[in-house]
Amino acid sequence: MTGVDLTAWILGSVLGLMTFLFIFRIILTWYPQVDLNRLPFNLIAWPTEPFLIPLRKLVQPIGGVDITPIICVGIFSLLREILLGQQGLLTMLSHVN
Image (cartoon, rainbow, N blue to C red):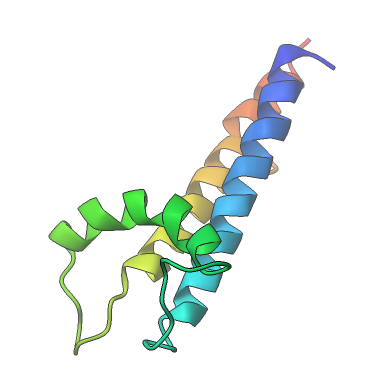
């Protein structure tokens, strides 16, 4: 396994996990009574909140609905595709010989 392959594997795992956490974060917005500072919900809130705070300053809620987790899913999915997709940058680097 080369360095590029290892980097792609780690980066793919992290980006996939973050996308998964943001999807759960979207589901948690349907339940406003949930305390995000208590287990197990803090395991979803703590890793995602650093990405949501600056984005909330740029994107205001639409009709009282916070859409920043949806935007983050799109950003992380786009990053994963650009870097690791079928014609992604790291994928192309790993096939150069």
